[in-house]
Image (cartoon, rainbow, N blue to C red; front, side):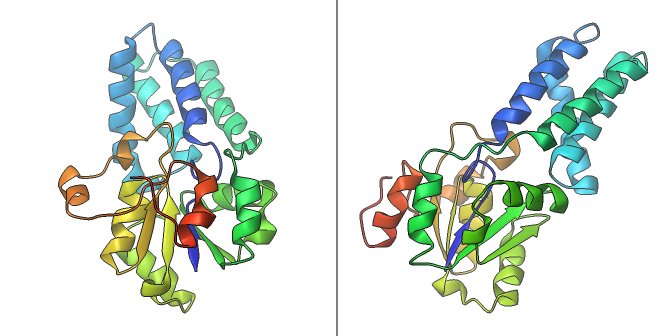
Length: 231
């Protein structure tokens, strides 16, 4: 049983957010410099995650609230509309599979049951899966509000999977590695070029465990077949 993260493991995601964050800095530049705008948006996102979860909708709401705050209410309705439009663009953006994903998943589907475990907005995440062109290879897809040990326990119990027989693959040590190890599963770290600040793990937690790190999605079949990881 092989678990797969989706965003920034199977397809590009974080880059889309960075592109829109740059537009947001320009939009609020009348009232705040780039560093101030970034810090304010980050603080708003942190507060809103608990209320609205992860994903594009929460991100758009955070930008709207931050623009109002930074401008003292002077931001125009037209500019707030622009922010909503950016969100629509993000949701409609074509899925960009990462290097080696399509051919490698085709191989892995012949040797493993593939279970996608991703977090975020249910409709948005399921929409990405449907548009990626690989959904026929997935045994099941589970979208959770948070990736913590209890969430993985619920997912695996619901699918009748023993954690000891489960391996999770993902780009986030915080979300894809540490919680799976905590419940007795195995995990493989597949770093992406960028890591969202909210996915930065506790260094002490990382230092307390060992896990394999692969340099490419293409390395997965050989590793799962008993090859040596790159760490």
